[in-house]
Length: 496
Image (cartoon, rainbow, N blue to C red):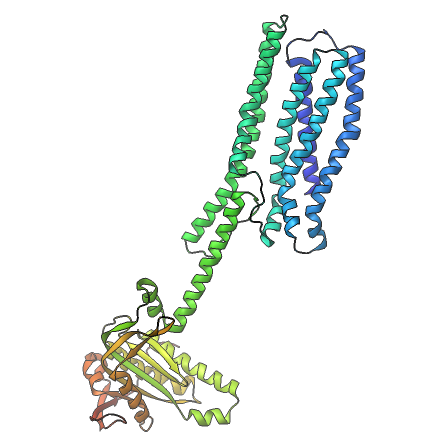
């Protein structure tokens, strides 16, 4: 990068110097000397040598010292300090200042030196070198900014600077206009002044002068305008690409931050926005896993409100048999592994039948059908889920047995708690009844029971798999509950 930068700067300065020499020697109209004298040639040779071998190397070392201060962290393999980031971001502008200073020194030296030989050369030399030097210096700024972009990107990816005080969009636009339009027009104006001041300027000289200035303005102006436009367009283009990726759902999209102006702040702001969206999506996913996708979607769409609404729901309760004995006989890690396998079967079947896991209570699971999302045949879905779980558990988690109870009826579904801490749940008689039926089911074979209300509300296609098996007075209830159990538990309908 360093070699590429200095080669580009050297070429830019050589081209700029060549254009200036051509303009002074052959383009600008008139001179008191028809041909360069030996004294004039010797004077310019001495000045050129001094500039080439003394002033220019000093300026290169000056720029190198500035650039080295911004690259030290790369060599040492550490994160840059804020001062080093600023040094990297300000390097193109400092390179511009170095070159502008050197060209002003050249303008002073050559103007005074030539004026000692021919006073008429003072103005034409000073104006030409000044305009050429400004154009070349600005061109080196745009080149340095583009070449140092990877270094700036690496620095800004580690540490950002809020107010770097660098040329922004407006400054770059004005720079492009100045180089592409202002300098050529200034050259034409200076030519006109010289022509008016000197009566011996011919039409041919004026035509050649205007032609050379016009062609130079077109070529240099085009290149400078392209570089200036790319300096603004590249960050905007990367932002547009990133926004399109975000719109398509790719929250991993990031843009490279390499600009220290307001465009760089936009790039960094986009990345911060994408990170925020990614964090929000991650929280939404975690929230959905914790409370269920339906609850999460409903909460995000409608907001959080305490209270709820009455729904006809089917409640499925699944509770492990002998969990206390299992916990005392096995290491805690093994118990957790067993419970996770057990819950995996329950959650899989509940979700596949359109239900919602309300909560895990120790080694028990409460599932609801019909809330928060409305479903058809909630009772039939709950009954089918109970049969599928009873079939899979002996095969997939043979170490654990579980009682399964199903109830159906009206319940309130909504958020309960306080504004600072609440949860979505279902409260009502079906929940209590399902829990009591589950306790009773543990003494049956198979350990699956459902209330008569659930069987009556189910679709006939599911109801035919069940048969009434009597009635019982459940704990904590004053009325008798009619019960049903599977007539035959078929194999699960889904591959596991």
